[in-house]
Length: 260
Picture 1 (cartoon, rainbow, N blue to C red):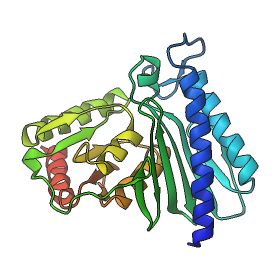
Picture 2: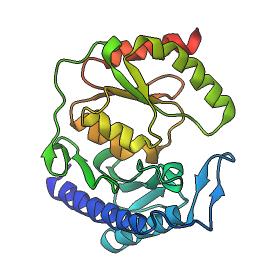
Picture 3: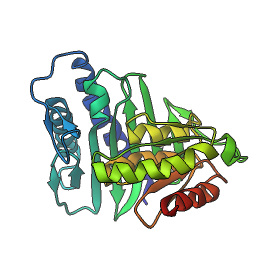
Picture 4: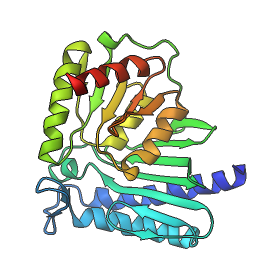
């Protein structure tokens, strides 16, 4: 990947994410009048999600008008440059609507199908997580590097998430009942992009979840990997990201939980 292109994409991603995050923060605490559902009655989307997506797309259209776009709230277009933007304009919508300060804007760019840059902005904490392929990851400009010596599985703090589909939730609860007694504890924050970045920042030891979409993963996985984390996908589609050395035992544990 040409460094000049990666630098440009990182700058554009940062600008687009920051603009959307600013819009989101102006809406904190305001009554919502246009909230609907998507995959299930508990899967919420609001006018704030849509406004944030329009903002990101506007920045991208001005700076990179010929790129492809895939965004959670429906924006989709094909391009001619080999660059595709993958966008979650408001990851953690339910948290946002209920006043829980765990939500983010996630913007990633792929070049010829390979993740190139990722930016996740957590406006509640004024934190910007950034990564570029082969160039490392940062939090507010501070370089992130996970320690080479992992915790044992028994002392690992593991984050996860749950589907909005009842039948999938039941399966996830079954797996969780196998995992929980064998790790330090479980955390469920409700925003996959933040979970992934928090692996990169050492706030949790690992993260796994079934049923995530490209926009949930694109930026956060790159941030985690560039900080030194390891990633894999199970046969059922469960995404797993862990600190170095912890991935293999966690994969085994999840496999066992899925069949017991």
